[in-house]
Length: 207
Image 1 (cartoon, helix red, strand yellow):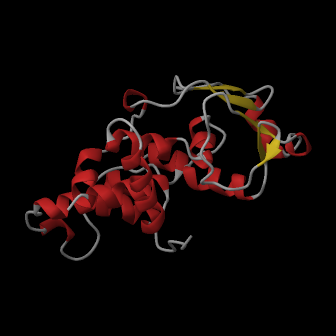
Image 2 (tube, helix red, strand yellow):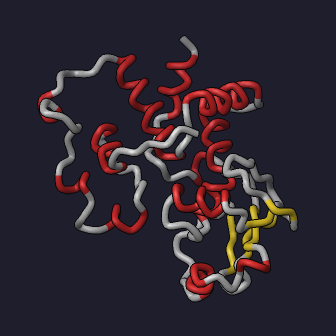
């Protein structure tokens, strides 16, 4: 996957919404979007009205950046969702939520999806007892995700053991003491709190 090397805070400003790409910083007074909630560039504060196509494109770009996926991979999620039963947009969001890096983030093990992706890449986790180091791995209902035994004594994970479980999505559960979580059910649209208008993405790809 290509690496974005510019400031991640510029992405939030470009999309006109907080994408929570930098973990705790996004909740602090240091958040660049809170300081200057306009698009980057000399004319960011005076841009003209956006067309319908432009709005759809920005919604797609925003969603890609939230989950940290590139265009080709994102298109594949749409095509997979389109072949599934149900509403295409909701199916697509469910697939994105079920990415292993996102699940690690949702469990509170990673402060951001980028950090969770790095932890997965470094083979810190197992799924149903087997090591998985692919961030895009799609979990299923009933899957057990755990920190591998030989990594549990790492300083980072020792700190996780003492954390309090926050607003855990109802489709997931996580035991900080055991460093183990489980996918209780597949996420529905009501379980996904991201401010995404998925129907606009479907309309864009359907043209």
